[in-house]
Length: 385
Image 1: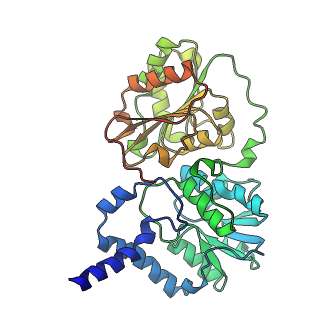
Image 2: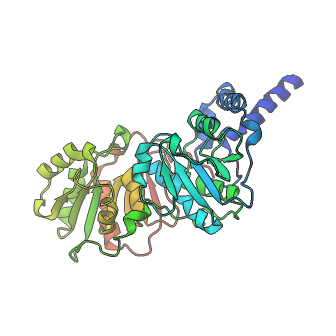
Image 3: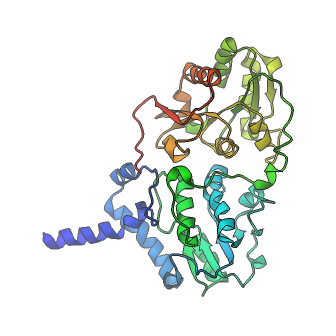
């Protein structure tokens, strides 16, 4: 029995890198719920398959915890799902590169390259492996994924490297806090409290016109993020929210924002609201570079968890944000953010319009000095940290 317990204990220790941040700093996550749902066999496999990849590519012995102090030219390999919101959280700690005085090229996919074209923090953004230079001082991989390791193996076989995420995989977590601490570990910078991590940044090139915002009236302007690609993160009852708020605050102006997937929802709103002369529909009509300043012109943003919500946070726009499922608001926001977060377990459309409207009215009636306030309509999701 003792032998069995020792073997189980060994494998439990072996799998810790799956769910414990390798930098050892606090990160808000649902690790408790993740472990409850994950068998030890599954955890062993999640780690073992990455270890096998590291071994067969002969990269295991080339990894370093941090870059050499004299490193000045870095390649950052960022490959994965081209998700706008995740990329904002993952890439915002690039502000630390200037603190350390390093120049960083980003290798990524075409979608992420388009998100950040012209951003001042990147020396180059590269999508074609044949365009990579050969004289980088150090390589940083986002994770031990096959895509990252394959790029490293084929183009920089013998180069020393570090990984931001390593084996970490499976939990829902605060990506900005995690990435900030990971970059500090690699760059040799001191860790900070989660409220002092780097501020979220989208594309710095889009900030060039931020001092020349479009002229708006003195009336309150409310922006609404329309549409979505995941059903449980897409709110379908904005018509009712807008009508309730309009009845209480008829002078408010409304701005609808979103991509092409929100056009049908925007049409339903236009047909169903009582204030057509005070509503501007920009859904599917703006380029990505135009949206940040539109957000900045708003006094309040209403958004479900997604790309526009993260863009709004990057522009410091006060928000009423909608969440569901395993996502806790602390996995997206800092306690210092000016946000009212509302969470429903089954999906954001379970949140009654009256609840959202009342919080909008409350926020606009006394907006100053607000910090993150979270309201849970069901059980609060697990959030360890």
